[in-house]
Image (tube, rainbow, N blue to C red; front, side, top):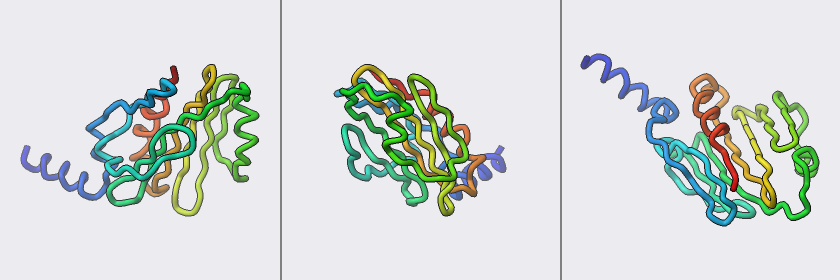
Amino acid sequence: MKLLAAAIVALCATSSVACANDWTTYRIPESGTSVDIPASIFTEPAGRPDGYGQHFRSSDGSADLTVQAIVNQQGVSPAEFLARKNPPSGIIYKRVTSNFFVVSSIKRDKIWYNRCNFTRGYVHCVLINYPAAEKRRWDAVVTRISHSLHGG
């Protein structure tokens, strides 16, 4: 048992994502946005995005997360919104539906992942950047964040 505990402590020391065991729900009251975030990873507030929300950073600076809500008074569709953002070429994963989009790719040594859900009046987004070398360790974290994103 001591050996297992020591292994867990060692793993946590080498990768903050391995210790995604303290989750909290981040809410944006103005828009009704809510999302589960691993508070044990994203420990540092890192400013505000456009619209409403918060940027977060891991303590070692290797990863960041933005939770954002943007007013969508014109009722722009997910496809239109994404096109207006002029995403970089070389997107590895892209899914666009009538009420959300997800795009992901690799830039330098980081994976970037963006999901935006569309509700009446708002676009609710999560943007995550993390080390590409740690992709497998991040998969479950990114999935939980993405699937928990909701808008009011």
